[in-house]
Length: 354
Image (tube, rainbow, N blue to C red):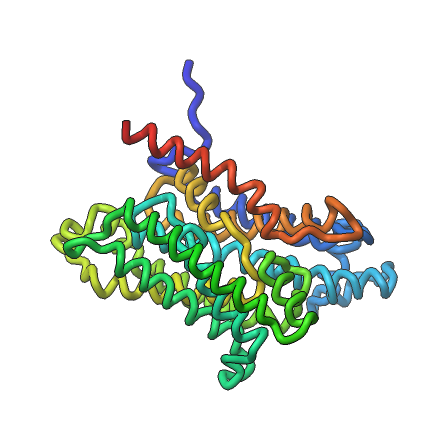
C-alpha cells in the first residue's frame, strides 16, 4: 500500500500549511529571542512579550529580572523581527527574479543584483556620495545599485527580443564579478579605518546591529511588494510559458517585466541596506517551496515568505551561538549551507535536460 503524501503538490492544503508555518514562526520568535550568550527561557520570554500587550499584560505577574527584559526587548526581539523580514524579502525577491527570467537557478546574488546594491551602498557609506538623499540614503543607494545592475543584465541577455537563459546566467556572473571589483576598489580607497571596518562588517551580512527603527522601511516595502505580486500572480504563472504564450493569454508582458524589475530591485536594495549581503536564501527557499506546494505563485509567494523568515532567524541563531560570545556573519553561514545546495540544484537541472 502506497502512503499518501501529507502535502501533495497537486492540491496542497494551503490553510493547514499556512497555519503550521505561522505557528512555527511564532515559536521561532519566542525561542530564538531567548537564545544567545545570555539565555532566557522560552517561558520567561513569552511572559515578557505578553506583558507588553496592553490588556493581556496586566494579568501577568512580573517574575523576571530587569536585565532579562532589556535583553529580550532591546536586543533580541528587534533582531529576530528583522531576521523574519529579511528572510521573507530575500525569498520573495528570489521568486520574483525566477519568474522574470524563467529559471529556478536565478536569485539576486547569482545575477549580480546584490553586488550592484553593495557597490552603490558602500560608495555612500564610505564617501557620502548619496548623503543628499537624507535618512534613507543607504536604502535608496542600494536600490539604485540593484536597479542598474538588473536592468543591465536583463538588457544584455535579450537576443532578438527574448531572454537567452545561458547568456543571462553568464552575464549575471560577469556583472557580479565586475561589481564586486568596484566594491573592492571603493573599500581600498576608504578614507579611514573605522569606515572600512564598518563597511566590511556590513558586506559580510549580519543582523547584529538591528534596531526597532530599522524595521519600518523594509517591512513597508515587503508588504507593498507582496500585495503587488499577489495581485499579479496569474501573470507570473503565465510568464513561465514564454513571452509569446503569455502575451497571447492576455498578459502585457513588457509592462509586467518592468514591474518585476522594479519590485525585485526595490526589495533587494532595501533588504541589503539593513542586513548586508546574505546569499542563497533567494535561491534555496523558492525551490523548496515549489517542492512543497507546486508552482502556482499564489501559493508560492506566502509560503516562501514564511519559510525564508524562519530560515534566516535560525541561521542567525546559529551565527551567534557557534563561537559564542563571538559571532559569525550570517552571510558566511548561508554561503556555507547554500553553496552545496546550489550545486545539487544545478546538477539536478542538468540531469532533467538530458
